[in-house]
Amino acid sequence: MNRTILLLALVAAPVLAEDLAEVDKPVPTFRLPVYNAKEFGESSVAIDTYVGAEASDKKTKALMVSFMASFCGPCKKEMPYLQKLHEQHKANGLRIMMVAIDTEPEGQKKVSELIAENKVTFPVAKDRFNIVARRWLGTKSPLPSLFMVRPDGTISAVHRGYSQDGAELHAKEVESALGLKK
Image (cartoon, rainbow, N blue to C red; front, side, top):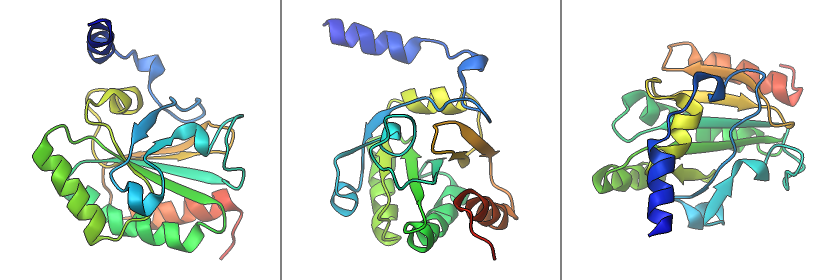
């Protein structure tokens, strides 16, 4: 009973604008279950695995966090692009994770299908109550929303919504964050 009350209080609690994720602020931390535990190798993922003072992955040079949903057309286009970036730059220290905000079983099933279809091997977290999304996005943020995070756990860039030149911009940011020159 007390757990239910606590969960309801967390879900209903307002998120203040100053608490939202933005450039040069520390990332809101979380741990969530993942859709693709078999491919990723873990049943859950946490931000502090990759960034922050207590990060266990010491090879992380940059973390890219993208919020998506199964009903978001641009998010579906972004998934294979992020998988390609993951394959190209994992050895260079880039880490990628997606956070799916689908709340309904049908949408969650579609997310699983998209992961399989795109052969995604980076973690896709399940935020079915949107608790994490509200801390990062607020209540009215467009999808996809992408955050670049420094190893110290602060945000270096935020991209809200889809843009035609997004892939080129992301590639430049990744190269810069990883210290790569083309």
